[in-house]
Image (cartoon, rainbow, N blue to C red; front, side):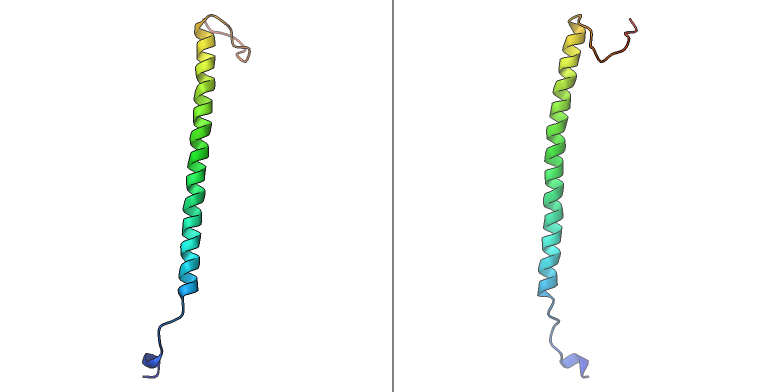
Amino acid sequence: MFLLQEGPADTLAYMIAGYAVIFGLMFAYLISLIVRAKNLKQDMEVLRQIEDKNTSGQKDPHVVSDYQ
């Protein structure tokens, strides 16, 4: 019966810390997605430039041999 007379546990600090960790992880993941999208756009632009060079008849200096 003595256990039933105690009040609720004081865990507000743990709840706030838990929410801070979760939101911190979500923010880090969001930043990661933004950086990945930016890098993907840069990669696509480089690939378009390489494709434009190859279709205009110029050789890409990074290609060792062309199998044409």
